Image 1 (tube, protein in one colour):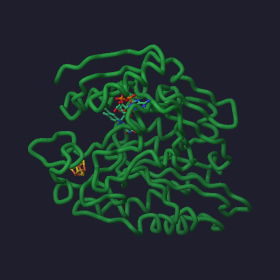
Image 2 (cartoon, protein in one colour; image 1 turned 90 degrees about the vertical axis):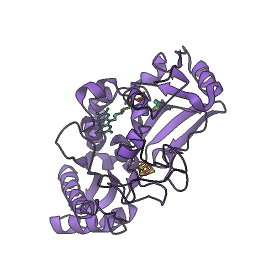
Image 3 (cartoon, helix red, strand yellow; image 1 turned 180 degrees about the horizontal axis):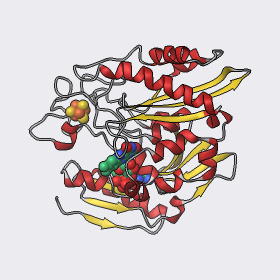
Length: 330
Ligand SMILES: Cc1cc2nc3c(=O)[nH]c(=O)nc-3n(C[C@H](O)[C@H](O)[C@H](O)COP(=O)(O)OP(=O)(O)OC[C@H]3O[C@@H](n4cnc5c(N)ncnc54)[C@H](O)[C@@H]3O)c2cc1C
Ligand code: SF4
C-alpha cells in the first residue's frame, strides 16, 4: 500500500475544498468498508484521504415529513431499523438488512453503499488480467472469461461488470434522489441517473463531478411503498451479494394492479429499472402465472454470456416471487 495524507475536515465547505483541491488522487472516507478493501488489493491507491466522519450533519435521519431524508453518513443498520421506513417502504429496509453482515452494516454509510465498486474478480485482483475499468484500454477479461456474476443488461464491448449494491436498486424503484454538494454548490440527481453504464469508459462510474460529495438521500412518500419487497437470491443465505434481486412494489385497486414498480439487481451494470415489465402489470390481477409472465418481459432483452445465461430463468422466477410477496402486502 502506498503512503497517503489524511485530513478530517470539521465542516462541509472545508471537506469540499480539500476534496476538490486534491484532484484525482483524493478519496473520501466514510465507513471505509469498500475503500480500505480496495486499498489492500492495490486497486485504490489514493494520495490523500478526506475523512468525512466529522460532519455530523451528514448523519441525520429525518422521516417525519413528506419525504424520508437520510444523511449520506447515516449507517446502514440505523436506516434499516427506522420504523417508518420499515412500515412504508419494506423494500428499502429489506435491501439494507439483506446486504453484507451486521458488523459491516453498523459501519457502512448510505453514501458509501451507493458508490461501492463492482465485485468483478478481474477488477479486484488485477494483474495478470486485463480490466478496462482498472486500467483503461487494457481489455476486458470477463467477456470471454469467467462471467457467471456478470451483467445481462447495460454492458458494452469494454465492460460487463455488475453493479453490486442492493440499496440503490430499491431506491430507484421509488424515484429517490441524492443531493450532492461540490465546488459549484448543491444539485440534485435522481438515483437512477447517478451511475453510468460503462460504454467506452468503464472507469467513469458515476455522474459526480470532481469534488462533489453526496450529502443526503431523499425518498418521496408514496403509497405504493407499503406493498413492496426486496427479494434477493444469493449463493448463500447471508453475507453475500445478489446473484439476482428484484425490488417490487404494487398498489392494488379492486384486486388489480393500479401502480407498480420493478427494479433489478445483480444483473446489470447499473441499478436497473424494468419499466416495460412495470407497465405490463397495470390492470392485471396478480397470480403466479401473470407474475411469471412479467418476469419474462423483464428479462426478454437480456444479453447472456457463457456462464450467466442461467440468470434469465432465475430472474423471471425472482420477479414472480417478488411480485407475489409485494401483492400480499399491498
Ligand atoms: C464482505 C462484504 C460483503 C458485502 N455485501 C454487500 C451486499 O450484500 N450488498 C450491498 O449492497 N453491499 C455489500 N457490501 C458493500 C458494503 O455495503 C459497502 O462496502 C458499504 O456500504 C460502503 O460504505 P462505506 O461507508 O464503508 O464506504 P467507504 O468504503 O468509506 O466508501 C466507498 C466509496 O464511496 C465513496 N464515498 C463514501 N461516501 C461518500 C459520499 N458521501 N459522497 C461521495 N463519495 C463517497 C468513497 O470515496 C469510496 O470511493 C459488502 C461489503 C463487504 C466487505
Ligand atoms: S467486466 Fe469490467 S471490471 Fe470486469 S474485467 Fe471487464 S472491464 Fe474489468
